Image (tube, rainbow, N blue to C red; front, side):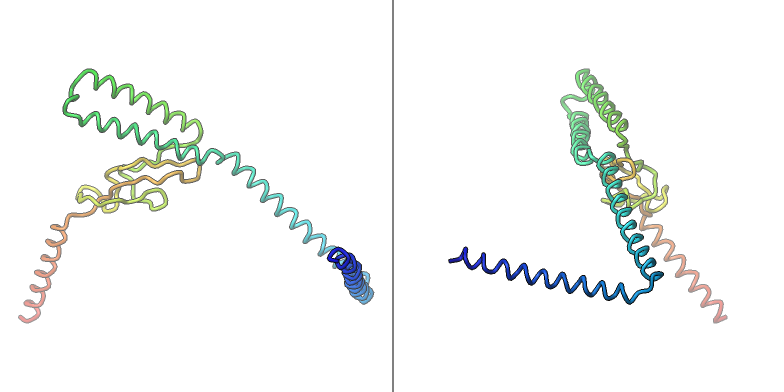
Length: 211
């Protein structure tokens, strides 16, 4: 029964679609008849221009996607590779601060080997357009730096990077990982001294005005 109903309903649907299509063609044909030849040409030119613009936008989008895939296809792999460099840094730090191994020949040789491995890894990354972000003595840039803490330092301008907690990297013009840094700030004592001086100067001015 269901098959018979579907078979019976299909011709009706097809007829309805035909009627709608016929109406659309009639409407467009009536519109075309109302237009002058010059207007028809302008309308066709407008349609062609829109179609060409759409094709051109698609072409540019595909080109960009292809270039991004070529330039940044290894982005995720490169990001994971940075963990190896971090682990090397942690291993060196742990060994250098081990009291049992301090000043031993075996420690020196181990550190030398770790340094060689680290340099090789950084050079491989550089060949693949992945480079370290310069941080120390640079002004804090929120686009590439992430401030983790502030350190009092009067010899540096406030907001200057004075310590690198974790290295940051760029892959061409794209940020692979921000550098985790500590930035300088002025000591609180100097601020208090300046405030006291300001208060004294205000008091002196008020006294002179009274006199």
